[in-house]
Amino acid sequence: MAVCEPALVNLGGLVGYEFRPGRFVEPGWAHGSTAVDPALETRALEDRLADDNRRRHASFFAVHDWLA
Image 1 (spheres, rainbow, N blue to C red):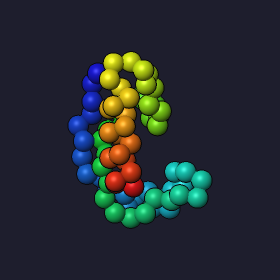
Image 2 (cartoon, rainbow, N blue to C red):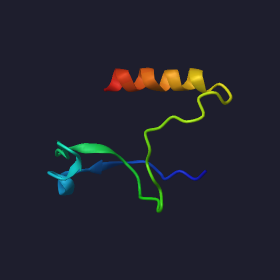
Image 3 (tube, one colour):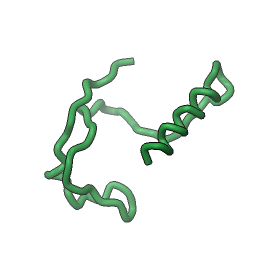
Image 4 (tube, helix red, strand yellow):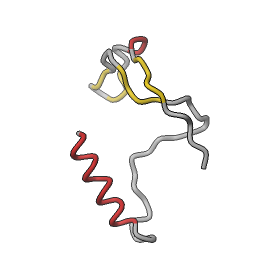
């Protein structure tokens, strides 16, 4: 699977954009990369029973909680 090269992105041009109901872009820097069409971002962790995904998903949730 190809992955775009990450970069720091200045959000100044998007300030005020509502990306989720009640959530707006604030000025500052964020992680970013070039768009990959027709990419679709999801928040679902699927295939919990495959391989060792339960352990990996638990680690992902722990990191997400620490950063949120």
